[in-house]
Picture (cartoon, helix red, strand yellow):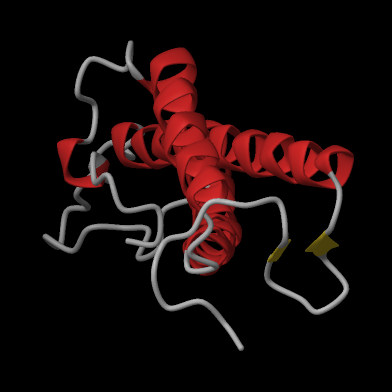
Amino acid sequence: MMHMTFYWGIKATILFDFWKTDSWLSYILTLIACFVFSAFYQYLENRRIQFKSLSSSRRAPPPPRSSSGVSAPLIPKSGTRSAAKAASVLLFGVNAAIGYLLMLAAMSFNGGVFIAIVVGLTAGYAVFRSDDGGADTATDDPCPCA
C-alpha cells in the first residue's frame, strides 16, 4: 500500500515499480538523483527564460512604407527570433515534464526524497537563476510544475 503521509525510511518506490530503494546505497543514490534533477530543472528554466528574452528583444524594424501607403513585406524575416522562440517552446515542454515528474516523486511521501527535491530546487535557483535580475518575474514560481 502506498503511503499517504510523510514517512522516514530507506524503503521507497519512486515514480515506477522498478525504482525501489531497499538499501542505504540505493536510497542515497535516489536522493542524489532527485537533487540533480531538481537543480537541472532550474538550469533549464534559466535557459528557457534567456531564449524567451532573446526572441522578444529582437524585434524586426518596421518595414518601409511604399508610395501607396502599404507597408511591405507582409511577413518579416526573423530567422534568429523564430529559432529562439522554437527553442523556448521546446524547453518549456521538457521543463514541464521534468517538473511534473519531480512533483510525482515528492508525492512518494518519503521525507528524504521531499527534502532532496526542495534542496535541489533551491540550490539550482541559487546557482543558475539568482543573478538574472528579475528578467521574468512571472516565472519565479516555487512550484516546479507551474
